[in-house]
Image 1 (cartoon, rainbow, N blue to C red):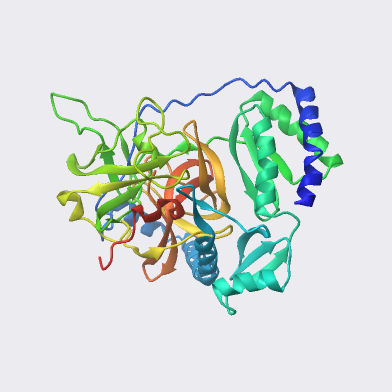
Image 2: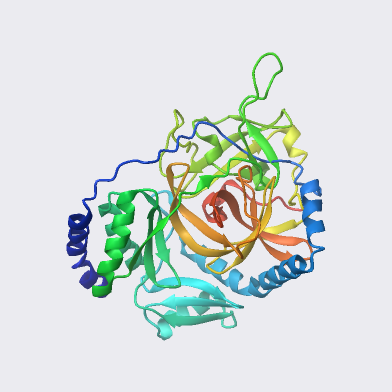
Length: 447
């Protein structure tokens, strides 16, 4: 903390200098009103079915370059498996209840972790026998881990970064720690002229001071209000001659259990302005009702604010759980619409390769940051993971894939679910990790 306190002494000077240079008086150039809901779960039949989108995808693998890329991605997922499992165990150890809400509470020496080929690199600010023993007690002496000493802990970076976040009067599209570079990164909306001034001036000043902070310009995440692993709709179905269809579509993350009853996991942003008990439909047939949801900080069930109802136990993520009725319960499977069987739940540290599936798209990417606060559809959502397509020409999720499955491929048509899609921007997309779902959803045994 001494390093942090020494660094903080320059913060007020830095911020004052920034303000003088650019008169921070941000104005809203963009306001995204969420006036429709899309829950796509293209099929409660993401169930042991191969649809035409997937057939088209398989046919594309006849191209030798595409096929080789596909096989390389799957091989890397297998190579990373043991290291990802080690990270999952650490995160489970850090997950505690704070004032009734689940949060990740990091030790003062912990500085993040990331995957390097088949090894989990654990960054710490102090490298001694006591610190090493702490992790080996959790993971065992044969875990595929390696330690690297860095300057700032995550707790220091978060405390330091939030000083700037609170002081900057401009549109912040995302902020959070940069694990690999041991810094705190703040992305400002590129369409705001004030943001451009802040980034340019701060970067000029940063040459003369050593601060673990970085500013950049970025885009907002667009909410993927459509199908994912399967397609569903929320609200009243269309009735010919009585009411028009309501375009509230999105995708299934997975079917499973809530308190031993059939349930479905999807994205929370699809229920903006809705209340508990809102009906969910598949092919105009009522299959269940929403019982718990989370989308960002704001808690409301009216107007255009995000809906956060039920005792959901966290302030993080973008997720919802649907209680399935008899129609929906008959469709519960631990399967995705491409035939992959989900055998368990996992977490995904930086550099993990993951795949995603929605109603429209099957895609892959690499995790670039974790536990970020991002803007989705005009709302701030903490606790999110961000990934990027592996190459510029790769497929990316599109509108309608929201709520769909994000998983690690284990080969032999098996996978570990790591989250559900929330939004995207060009090659980058963000998903809600399963960490925040807590006890509200679990995999159904034996289906």
